[in-house]
Image 1 (cartoon, helix red, strand yellow):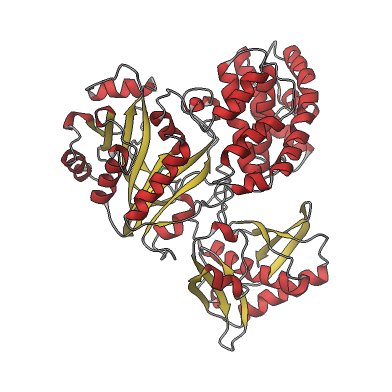
Image 2 (cartoon, rainbow, N blue to C red):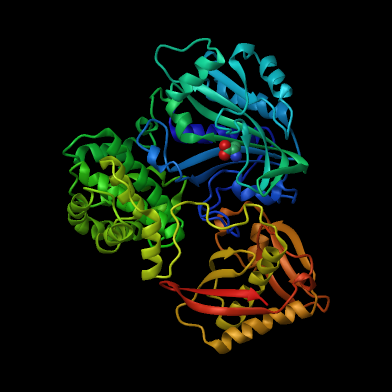
Amino acid sequence: MQSAEIRSRFLEFFKKRGHAIIPSAPLIPENDPSVLFTTAGMHPLVPYLLGQAHPSGTRLANSQKCVRTQDIDEVGDKTHDTFFEMLGNWSLGDYFKKNAITWSYEFLTSKEEGLGLDPKRLYVTVFGGNEDAPRDEESFAIWKSLGVPEHRIYFMTKDVKGKEPNWWSPGDNGPCGPDSEMFYDVTERGLGDMTKEEYMAADDRQEVVEIWNDVFMEYEKKDGKVIGKLKNKNVDTGAGLERLCMVMQKTDNVFATDLFVPIMSVIHTQATKYDERAARIVADHIRTAVFMMGDGVTPSNTDRGYVLRRLIRRAVRYADQLGIVGGFEEFIESITIKYQEIYPILAEKKETIIDEFTREGSKFKKTLANGLREFEKLSISAISGSDAFALFSTYGFPLEMTEELAIEKGVMVDRAGFEVEFKKHQDLSRSGAEQKFKGGLADTGEKTTMLHTCTHLMLAGLRKYLGDHVHQAGSNITAERTRFDFTHPEKVSREVLDQVEAYVNEAISKQCPVIIEQMKKEEAQAQGVEGSFWEKYPDVVDVYRVKCDDGTVYSSELCGGPHVKNTADIKGRFHITKEEASSAGVRRVKAVIE
Ligand code: SER
């Protein structure tokens, strides 16, 4: 069964069981400063898991694009990839463990409606209990009632390293809860019955792979601690499409599935030296880069742009190792063709992606050989911060690449020294990890919420004084400030910024209620509601309006919240502190509440 059929069977299965099928959110999280990329299907749904009503109802399902780069060093093995699609179904205070587990089992094993997998190859883990929540006897009993033999259901408890298994949370803050994970035996011989210890060893050898996770989200975390129960008992499930393809297509690695075959064949054709790990890294990184660029990320030295840059440069390095000399066009095309039906944006932006990728890749290709030579000279002993910085500034080696090369050689890199050099040379912040700002997914802190409402008002003001071509191109809000990117071709004068500021402050001083209205997407569009990425929203949307009692509407915009209930809750004066270019045709402002 090919990936397209697995995806559509999944959605059809849950649609038949009353779920609204919602579109994949973009890879760049909207209104969430805590992470650089969408890392799980539940991520865009955090406000709803915390209790807000979702416009499409209480049962949802979709296939969500995700990026996780914290395991980038593992890419090249059988199962790790930095981009993946997560199939998920959600209950927002609707059904709970019984339906969730039963449907997971039915979808996995039913030949007619699901995947028809062999129940004898299935293993299940459940939460073994800790100080926050009891052992999950209920899930155990449900699995047993479905016919999964008792000795293949393992209660998992904290291991010696203190890692909490079978408990899922998106970070230190937000909705969380115990989970039940499903594993599938991918060996040819078949593993048969296993004790818990044997099963764990098989997991280490990647002979069983996790294919689905049902999270029972009924708890909430703050600053890393469980603080109590949520308003609703929710279900969040996630099944990695790549891994489902792997088991359905009876391969023992994701790179042999139909999702990767096109790009892997191009790589194998062009490579003059064979190295399977390098080929997998090239395939993985190019695919992720293409998806990031499809959602508007461009290579740079900060945040998302830095992660993208690192992926492209790493792909170039491994392509070089494989003896590939050509350009990147064919690789990129193999991806856009594979995904064009489900993600048309990739085909639409193909030329831009090829151009940008080629520019970034070729620049690095030119300096790679010299950089590697230089590295050889330096790596006789430990690499100092200034040497690592020289490799970065002269040859374009991201720090992590120097570190990777150093590990291969068994020498150390002075990371702290590099950071000092970096700061000295340019006052830019950069980060290789997704986790970036303090706060968290569920950063519904008072200050952040105030700034979020101000950001809506500011966009309305910018549109009023600059024109209707102005739309949001990105936003990043913390408790300290809002950083907002918008489409506009030239510098915005201080006079206009003052006018926009006055517009926002007028709405604050008039103490206007903020109203959420649910309506059909077409209706919202027809009414001129402001929003970007319309195609990414479900049929029914939440419109947030700042509407004063005198009838003046200061802002009306598509959003998922959180916002203040009344502009009177915004304590202080809104002030735009900075305006600058962000990228071609996009301006960036920073603003604070004083
Ligand atoms: N949030 C869970 C995960 O990412 C289930 O969707 O695994």
